[in-house]
Length: 219
Ligand code: DC
Image (cartoon, rainbow, N blue to C red; front, side, top):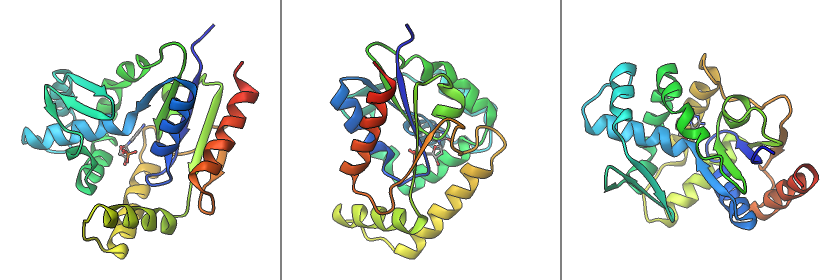
């Protein structure tokens, strides 16, 4: 039998990462944070002086990356990039490199390699529509742009970083538009996805909804 996969797609800031790791922990399954891969390519590309629209150079560079996810830490060719890939700039740059089809193709097999027993929780934009089309459980986690900007604002403020709510909202709307309108693997729910709008929900409520869906679809 195929190793089961739960895909959790949706726009940035909807809570996918938190929900995906809570589900993976609860089930003892593997976790794929696919956004981190695009962030790593963007950060490593900038460090190498590669233009963010130079698909060929980005693909060649990414082939030489040794990426290790370990206990919440991200190491690339031995360097710890855990914090570097989490900045707003890295997210915006990731959205640009993610719009390039050759870059998406280059990490397709790498992503599928995360599917190992006893199961995988995969978080991203196209997990259910492109990478794991046969996943028995597909979730599309949405929330209003305003709610997502506010959550991000509180998160950054708690980390002691000065931010402007309006600027954050504009960045989120710009990134949404680019992710939704791109030609390849645009952000959209799979036909067979359960759509959850988390605008008015707590993380615990979202996790409980997803767990119920998993129990009804996976033995
Ligand atoms: O989820 P995130 O914020 O870490 O993702 C960063 C960017 O990567 C996001 O703007 C779009 C892109 N991405 C993608 O195109 N496909 C995925 N499966 C995951 C992320």
